[in-house]
Structure formats: C-alpha cells, structure tokens
Length: 171
Image (tube, rainbow, N blue to C red; front, side, top):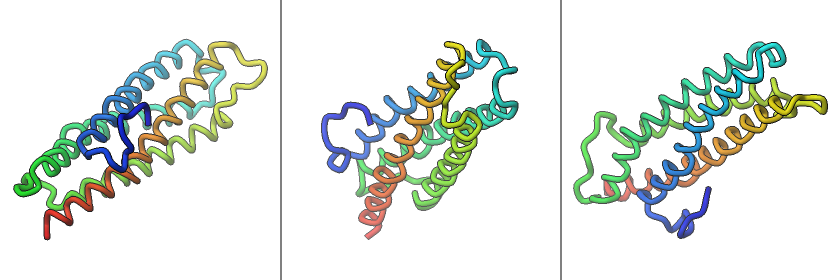
C-alpha cells in the first residue's frame, strides 16, 4: 500500500478503508480510463483479439465492485467500528455475506488478470514493439500490480479484522 502513517495491523478499519479508497480505488478508476484510451491509440491489429474482451469484462466487474464497496460495505464497516455498542442495521445480515461476495469478485478479477497476463505474455510487448504498445503494456501491468496489492489488503487485513470486530460485537 502507499505511504501510511501507521502499520495496517494497528490502523483503524476506517483509516484502512480511507487508504484503500484514496490510493487503490482512485488509481484503479484512472488507470482503467488510461488503458482504454491507449487501446484506441495502439490499434487492434497488433493486439490479441480477445484482449479487449477480457479488459472490458475486467473494467465492468471492477466498476460495479468498487461502487458496492464504497456505497454499502465500507460505510457499514465504518459505522460498526465507530459505534460497536449499536451495530448498524443491514439488509445483508452478517457482514460475512457481503465480504464473501467481495472475495468471490476478487477471485473473478484475479482470473481475468491471469487471462490478460497470458495474452500479453506477462506484459512483454517484444523487442520490436512500438513505444505506444510498450506504454500500453506498462499501463496494463501497473493496473495488475495495483489490483494484486489492493485485493491483498482487503482479503488479508480489512476483511478478517472486520469479521473479528463483528464477532466481538455479537458476544
């Protein structure tokens, strides 16, 4: 994760969420737009035919995923942390339910990234590639790298700590 004031293990869930949104969510949205713009500049004839399809699926999945996190899950986690004595009501029962959905969607993103990596031969444009193609592959790789880190922080830090909090509040 980008620069942080304290260890993620010590950070509040709310500050972890702010870090995720301000670094990873912002970067994901801007990088998806950048990659899409570069698609137009590079030209389809030099790219694997299914690359655009996999990228579009990735973009569509991510835009919906980010919205669900920002509008439903993250506000719930923040409210739960801020007032554990009076847990917020939800339409999803246990927070484990939307977390499970987010993790399922993370797995789908990882699968799409694996397909894109495979199609681009791990983002290697080749020694005779144009500068535009090299820039395009570098932008895809930067998106991939950030998504791997983003998913790590949610699946391995934020979500387990949220589930622990919910268990403590329930007892």
